[in-house]
Length: 289
Image 1 (cartoon, rainbow, N blue to C red):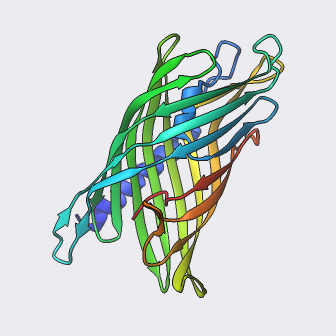
Image 2 (cartoon, rainbow, N blue to C red):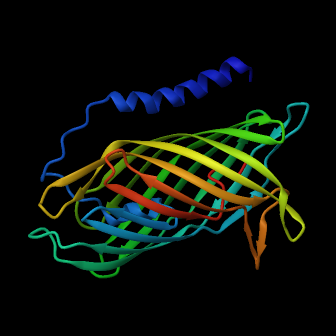
């Protein structure tokens, strides 16, 4: 695949996210349903907060099974990698007193949404990761349950810079749920970001060299999420910006019991309105390659 094709595909992904910013979204009104607990299964481990409305702590346990490693050699021969994912998410939801809408309450949720993720080498620098997940979740307090799904594709293009490395990150995905009672909903998201890997020559762990990873990611939501507020109104959230910092071993993952931890990182997310914020914890790169 030549450079022109590479550039064309990348530009299409960029235009998708930029175009969404110019679209007019419907004004939030009391006719909207508040965001459903099933969306917490899409989040990573972290603490998520809507000012004066809701706090959610999500613990996501993401075991994976690699069936086949991907590769591409100097002659252009390539093999697609295959990975099975078994993500289990536990959410603790704290709802503030929302007047006549809902009383002050806490409840817990659990969801299991397994899936398949492929790793496709386009060039030695450019990899794609299409994925599809489908599963089920339940809310402990009421016993309400829902079928949950999400699918999409992630892209990573690396640019060497001496000992350092830049990566262009993109993704498009579609997520949704169908509850046993009530209305189904869905969400489309476009991500556009950049990551910088910096080897720390002076710092080691068990005599192994360490890398530092800086990242910045913007996410545009094609469908607004509406959070109910104490005054009975709804606050629409249609984007977020995430700053991340992580460390990893240069030559491979950390070994912890039977688990491979690719990196340890913290992130901070905030919406353009400033009402949504989150502190996240990760044990794996946004994109493995």
